[in-house]
Length: 388
Image (tube, rainbow, N blue to C red; front, side, top):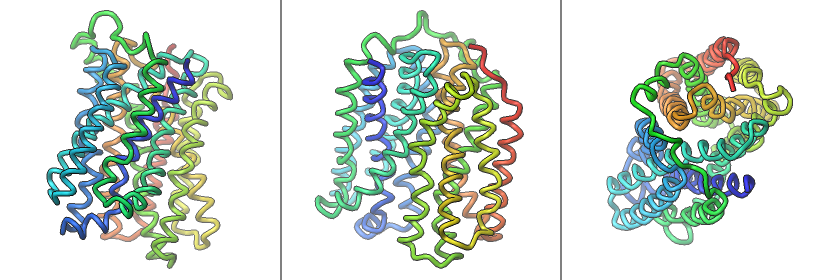
């Protein structure tokens, strides 16, 4: 039953992740069609991140008081609404209506992410919980790869507005697998958590420590995703297509890394979380510091693979960790807090990174990114093991 549940939840999340990123694959076509500039075009993806940051904590509070399983189903329905809405708005050429549909999709995504982690964690045993959650979180890079790879094909055949409909079927298949295998899971645990219990999440120092690790991890992840290609084009001299292909290995290796984070923690370290988090930043820091001093493409590819694997260990494991340091009655709130803080790092780092690149160049930008990884080492060193 657990395999079907994890697989179904992962398919739902994969469909939503593909929906989230797919406009980036056909941005020039959308800009030409709607007559918008690059700043407005950035909202096509950025809206979902921004909505997720704001909506995650309220969504977690609701999930702790309701049936997470039913909320997953409602989120898939919301994705269909957002997909049809975006398709119709795109065909009419209504940019802001497309953005509104993306906001609905952002709410659906954060509900699926938080509820999926909650239900997968409940279904798994203590011995394999981190592994199961790691498999679920790997749906993010899988969805990104599918969206980036197939978006242009869908747009070429059916017109670019069809990209908003293309991945709803993946989520539906996931729901058909998830629904029967999750029976009996997802219900609220006894009485709804009180406001005081909700407040314990925000007053928990370990929750803030884990949240900060997630913030740093997502900041590094999105910084390299956003500016690695530009660096290879402007400083190394690769074509835009070639640099994009090279940088693609950075998120792609997350499929292995996020699953491995749980396996390493559960099997190699006997359920301990701190060694994996510490190792994640210890490996990442020197690789990021050295990035701009490397002039050969094969070595840069190796560095991207290793750094992508290392930093996504934190992205895979931190969601299991944060559930284990709060009361089970507010576990979904803990996950929601982690999602909100982490995605805030992902939202801010490309903007801040661009400002630093413009002001001081790539060397300084990657130096500061390495400093963030060094901060992660110091925090992970102090991370306590959860009392489970």
